[in-house]
Image 1: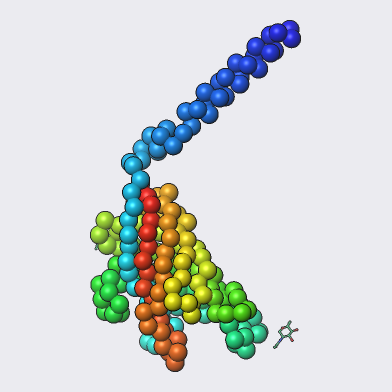
Image 2: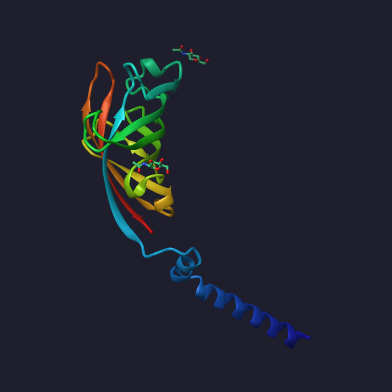
Length: 185
Ligand SMILES: *[C@@H]1O[C@H](CO)[C@@H](O)[C@H](O)[C@H]1NC(C)=O
Ligand SMILES: *[C@@H]1O[C@H](CO)[C@@H](O)[C@H](O)[C@H]1NC(C)=O
């Protein structure tokens, strides 16, 4: 009886380890029918329009101390901003940046960003990338994380570099240049 159960345990172990051995990158790629990974670089301008005729970035929440806070701590904006090929608002529309950002530092102006980039033209039409990260907007360059995507960007990962192209203190509107490097299948 004892020998029998030991043999069973060994058989189970063997079965389990052979299963483990085939669960490598190659096989899950095959199971999901995916090609070899590639790197894509994306470049566009994100238009954060807070004031004017057609705002695409609107404040939806704040604390009673937000407006007296030097860093607008607690402010939450929901955005449906345009993404264009060039820096001008009239430049070719390539998609939209939809999501929200929240002021989340009490020592400098820095936003927690949660944005879905929705692409609307070319080979990435209909695909999305999801970016999450910390955006201290006064810094020349900010790095945020591409945590995933859909469509052509399914299982994507990467990073985004944001640089303010122009910002207007009076209107609060800003145009931000994005360079995204993404690994996807
Ligand atoms: C903000 O709200 C809290 C809680 O209601 C209150 O205690 C505090 O006095 C308020 N602060 C200001 C600046 O109004
Ligand atoms: C993007 O895809 C949508 C939906 O399939 C289509 O209606 C639209 O014409 C496409 N846009 C471009 C620029 O190819």
